[in-house]
Image (cartoon, rainbow, N blue to C red):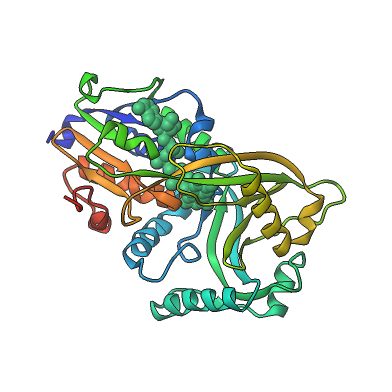
Length: 356
Ligand SMILES: Cc1cc2nc3c(=O)[nH]c(=O)nc-3n(C[C@H](O)[C@H](O)[C@H](O)COP(=O)(O)OP(=O)(O)OC[C@H]3O[C@@H](n4cnc5c(N)ncnc54)[C@H](O)[C@@H]3O)c2cc1C
């Protein structure tokens, strides 16, 4: 492994939120970075995402190691966002989130999640109907509020990606729009594979599979109800929907299917999203649909990403599943620490060789 003081050259493969963050962190710390990515940014999962930085409301009983990793990254987000916003990019679109339920089964499921979080001492607070109405007057009166989390934020995923690439370039990273098919042909000393759901094409021994998610973007019209101010997560008769505020509307997501690399937006997917979103926030019916897309969450067998060294020349930063935006700061720090020869203890659960 090269000594950090040699400031070795590094090829980062993949210009989504993960590769761009890694490229920025490494370039800023003196590594000579080339960031290779396929030209069409809209094909990245990052371009499609919702942008919730939401470790608690994304948490699931039993996934404690993932929550610990997410919380470590969450702690880094305020400074990360502030640095991205220094150059005029507006990244943060909302603060706080609430979880609401449609029927008894949904309430029971959400209570189970809340009880697990409370047991861990996490900052979730019960939410009354009166409090929910005061926070979000546009919510359907039939929905039953369960809990709120004040410390979560939402970011504009697309603005975040553009800001990251700007930051990486300003720190000296060279951005090359090219697909890489053969790692051995690269001249750089070290390689970081951050190819999202396509990672196993370059490193077949690592198991990262695509899990499709359909999502839509809606714009407020002059006579529409204002969008929610917080992230709203609805559990609607066993399905999940979220409404993520944007300055001019909201993002509504997301379906979840095992469909290989298919990114077709289906009528059934959009029907379900619209039905559930309207059950949560009836005013949505007046909004204009501006974008419908599908992305591929890069998922590992245990839902924990793969971050670290694979061999003497190769590192991986991939498999961030439904939390890639959230986990970006920690991933950048972990790859930097690994190259510096001082692996980050907080990222130990994400060691890429843990399945071997
Ligand atoms: C519908 C949906 C909603 C989501 N919402 C959220 C959310 O609210 N919060 C959150 O934290 N996460 C969310 N996620 C998850 C998050 O989007 C992903 O975890 C994250 O974007 C993964 O980033 P990445 O950089 O690893 O991959 P990507 O963004 O896919 O980037 C990989 C890049 O590598 C390039 N590439 C691939 N192979 C090669 C190659 N051989 N050579 C060169 N370039 C290559 C690709 O073209 C792409 O640009 C969501 C995902 C989906 C699908």
